[in-house]
Image (cartoon, rainbow, N blue to C red; front, side, top):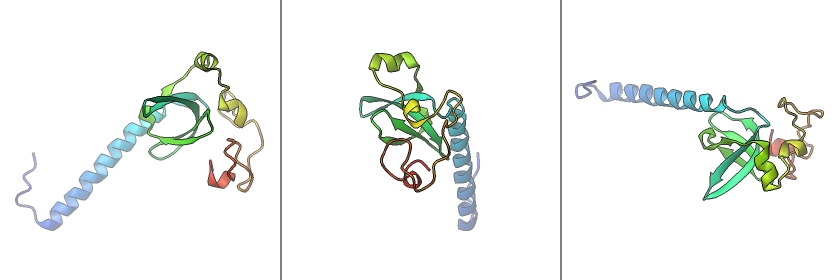
Length: 134
């Protein structure tokens, strides 16, 4: 245990910065560990306000992941809220995985040429690629 009663204000501020940096590092490490369980293009599910959403994982961000839901909505989610989905769940739900729509194959690579930044986004949102999934 650290006795901080004898520390000056400057020393306490320095200690606080170190503690905050360490907590951020631990959180990022945990998040990265969870992200490694998933692959780009993988079918995932998550709950929001009691409603289950299905979608395709499209991007790893620094602390979160981007998922394009089957209704076309783009979600930025903490990866700890995601669950892997098998394709049987899609058949039961009668929804075509977005991976087929946006051209992602089973090896998580795009099957078409790279999209230019000003072209419409392949996720189907109607936005420019640079404003959507870039």
